[in-house]
Length: 375
Ligand SMILES: Nc1ncnc2c1ncn2[C@@H]1O[C@H](COP(=O)(O)OP(=O)(O)OP(=O)(O)O)[C@@H](O)[C@H]1O
Image 1: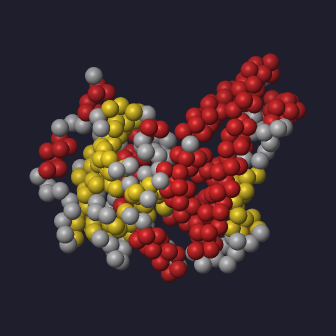
Image 2: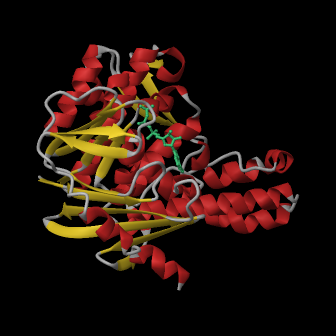
Image 3: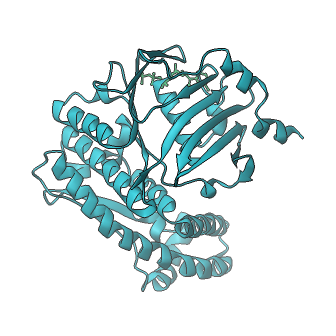
């Protein structure tokens, strides 16, 4: 299986990062430094440049305070070819280019990175919306069709909710037809994908030393067969509440550990292990789907106090073709180590960073992605 290879990452006006171009070798790059140095921001920028994706809803948050626009660029090798992916960000706007040509987010290689974060535990202990978002964002990467149908479905639910809030029961019929067309496809795709995802997560959970079996199931508020009837039968309740109460947007991803619902019964440590298993499963599913090993981004391995899980994270990073691992201490066995300080990254040992002189030269020519927007 071929790897996705991030050759270099450039950023301009991105959060607290100083303008930079960093080069990344194969293997593990360890990034260490004090709290607030910009380590998470670097991984976030790498994830954005590799996939075009961010879970930040207000894009201006990503732009350095006092600036209007930000820019990230990845020079990468995917499917055996070299390409340049650029993302320009402004207030509520995101522009993407591959090799200089404007593209939509779905056109970037969707399986090129996986990001593991300490806050992933929220997938286990948080609200159903977080688990749904995990599943939906993963399946949207696995299938462009799923992403498209889900976006249409979610738009329809918002429009239907607006009609319900306006008390326009007659108007909901239009939206009902669209929901009944889109919903079952979403439910069936989720069911199919979950079979494989559940196997991969169970394997990963066992690999983390857990003796309890992990399962993933959907808790569905309706079924493809009964969706139309369920919508019709709950209309009075929906008008009273002003929202659509049945459909795949209400489903939960039920995680069970040793037969018990993990959200309610798992210990913090077990929850953290499950979250890692889910990310590992994501990595494997994307690799199976696209035939390429994604770049692995591990945020704050040193937050992992349990030696077993620390070792798992470091072994996982060492087992993939390329990983960037951050922490407040050095990641052992890294091919390259960068010291992070106040938004800057200084290589230790062999210099992979481009010489300073080259950096402004490249980034000072205002990236076309940004310049074009003003035209
Ligand atoms: N839009 C922005 N403009 C300027 N600075 C920002 C912006 N967004 C975030 N920051 C700052 O970036 C700094 C670095 O944050 P980051 O989360 O990357 O640190 P970190 O090195 O991962 O720290 P930790 O070890 O605590 O996780 C923070 O001090 C934060 O306030």
